[in-house]
Image (cartoon, rainbow, N blue to C red):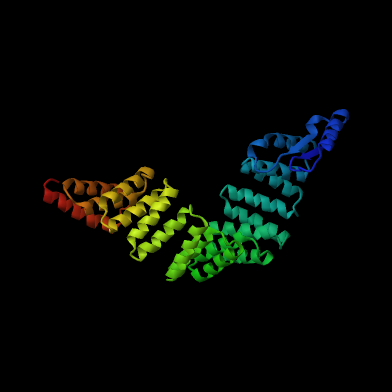
Length: 361
């Protein structure tokens, strides 16, 4: 006899719980190892005992498809995705007409970065159940990973038809449209998402980016201001607003926004690099060098930061050491992958000429 006690059943009275426990002990036909406790989801470290109990159920009844499915689900919570796929596969062999089993196996395959294989499972789930909304959505997401944008949009369309209140459909479909250069269509999706979720700062930032591409600067700035009003600690909003201000030649304002972005996210190397480029445009060369240096400290493998350091030292150009430093950083940028970047050669040559002018090689 198998008794399953679900710890999510908060309404289960203590008297009933103890009655079940007493019955387990009193009955000679029930072994205490037959009690399976389905622990609440979201606790991956607590599934070992649950999995072990399913092992016993399967050993006693090797054709129990539900037990294989449930054990696979427990393994998913434990992040044992390969083992979960094996169990889902057995469950499918035992019950091949179950759409949920194919869907969950597809989810497991995506966790292992196997989007093409996941799509095959989503195909099967949809063939069994043509109204399986989540299967369309997840298949579309897998297609996004494979850069199959047009096909992904078709799946998101179907998902929206089945349920128009799932915000992730609009967000992900807009991403696909952005990749195809369909800014106006992407804006329409972000607008629908905002209608459903008017305090979604991320959606305002994404919509602002597309408005900027279309030259709608006023609309872009309004969306970025709104995003910051919703969430004053959302660093990407400050970053995007800084980018927009820089394009308008408002370098001081752009630097102020990057200051705020860095306050929120002080470990982002890219932010220091961007702020440094703005400081060069305002002739703050020493301050720019400090930002580029911090960027290199945080992410030493990125060639662009060394290139910017070389340029900053070249522009500073007070003494011979500045030009020597410029040469050093240009060479580091070249070694890290900027080999075909023409400005490096141009400015490196000028820096080398300056070193010679000051005396020395």
